Image (cartoon, rainbow, N blue to C red; front, side, top):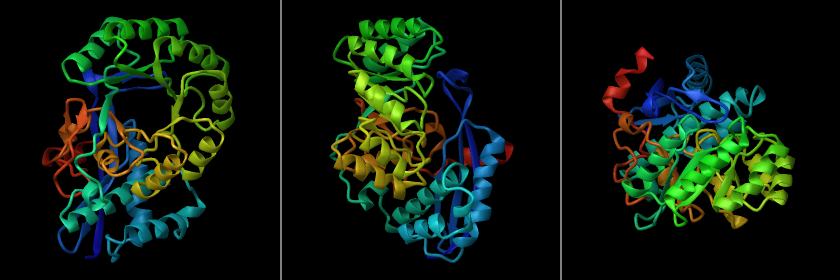
Length: 370
């Protein structure tokens, strides 16, 4: 099997209720810029990144994937995934102009598409190709009811629905309001509505200064919060280390880190307790696995960020021993042929061959209208 061409794809899927917001951004669509890798056998592999649906940026990602990385892939066997990843990562001209950012997002989409092809060629879902088991329990926690722009009444009713109707036992709500007392009132209301048995996570999306993060973080223990996610500046190891020393609630982070070495530094400093690698930012499954193994060696739980809307990450969680919990946001489910399935608050192991990233025909028809 040989690679014959790379096809650029940009999908923009609408988010819940026409718009959501956290402490730093408000969006109406989720972007999935990526590639379809075609082969001489007719098999096609799909891989996507995850963005805030900014078309100029999304175009840069797919152009990098197709025009810069693409020529290095033509004629190669897509099943030699790890060797190709090394070739693209360290032995291409791109290495000298960027080892993170757009180049990494583009490489991530390619790597996912290659793993998708490898699994399809074997006739297996990716989790089975990688040696996983469908009997593993992978719990879902839901983020799609906790947005910062929801009024308090909507926040509480949505969290109730997720628990009482949809069967989730863990939900995440956003913090980082201009007035910290607003966050505490919202958190208090959700805890009172859900009771003590439901786990609640909080996420500041990097908004807070270190003093504000310490002030808010010291109050989270009152509400038995599982973790304080991305409390302050994404890349600041020292600030997170000092925060971890100052508060009781564990820290979660990783969705904004591009390199395995960055995770190494946070883990070594004791600045993170729940490790959240994302395949779309970590140059794909190949580098994600390095981070997951690293976290597991420190006895830290691996809870992937769901930039791919959990399509690929669900496969990885059914394999990796450090993963037992995975974020769920449903924005891409209507755009995928085999969307992730939740039953009784847990992921159901996919049965279709591949990595689960193949778009529907309807989704593919929207590409040229983006």
